[in-house]
Image 1: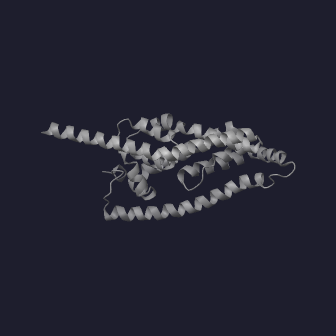
Image 2: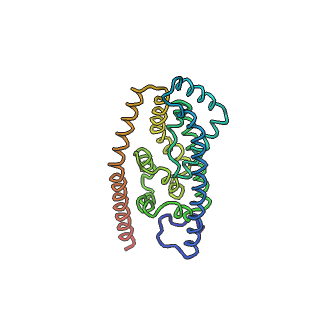
Image 3: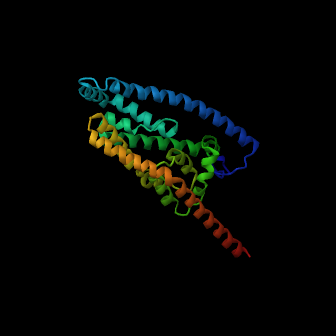
Length: 263
């Protein structure tokens, strides 16, 4: 059996696998720190000049002029890279609001989603190459246990869609787990990942309206975002726990049926 085919949530690792996991974990932490610093420098480069003169006379005109300078390939590629890295290294804060500030709700959403797709493709390829030891080194034991029901392939596509709809679910963590489940790459990118679009659109619209000085729209969008975030925080763990219980009962029932059949 190839190492990447090892059971994802297996708690027992050989000494060799444990050593490999420690090395991967240290390496990933070091890379995460470097990437985080670079991303923060990039975000600062893009955003600080825009907000440095807030409240001053002619600030909005200056913002529009500055933003128009980011419409070229240089600014777009930088933002695209930061968004892709945000998927690879979850410590980078979500920057969809920045996309709305720089490119407006439509193009900001489009570029943000494209960056998420590219980042997810990179995660998929890396996980398929290095397998479970990498995932076990990156994802905490808490999250491995919390999402262990993903090993059950029954209605897995629907389960993933629900997880991507619920606010507050660590979707970048789930993205690392999915390649080791039975879901197909085509199914994930066609049917699951697009469910990130509504949250992206809401964030970019908020950023765009705030920059343009549209206070009414900013307050409404901010209130909607806050309510959704609160609902996600309140109910996400309960929904995940319910999915886990259903999965355990299904596995228990299947095991019982198999045992009876063997007798």
